Length: 125
Ligand SMILES: [Cu+2]
Image 1 (tube, protein in one colour):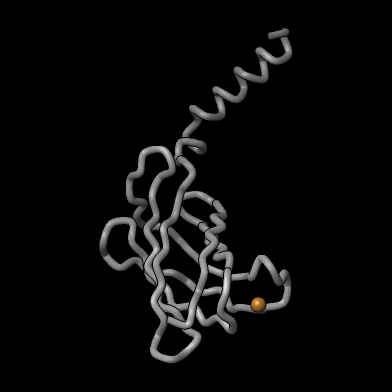
Image 2 (cartoon, rainbow, N blue to C red; image 1 turned 30 degrees about the vertical axis):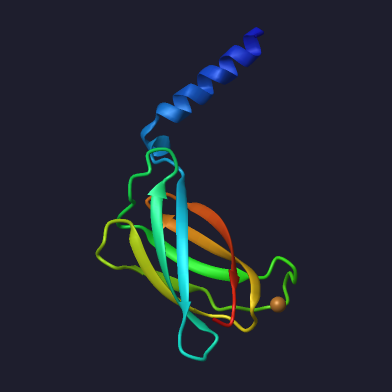
């Protein structure tokens, strides 16, 4: 390493150790069930630390959806996810207008800003 890359590495280490960066990135697992014969889905989202796997509580979550194969074709209203009371678990109901593969855009405001894109297929049953 030359002098410049050493100082960059030191700066990155300092950043990683700072309190602001102490919150690790997050991962989400999502399961959804169709509400009756509608295009609405009730979903449960498990939010965990990417490295520790610890459930993340008190998160601020808004979930949007888009179809990767049809960019901009759908205008799905983003919804807020609410804590269920179980550590790391949140629920939301989202109204889609087509079956197929969707990318859920899980936007986090707390405990740190993050965007998790979670692809999943929604089928008639
Ligand atoms: Cu579509």
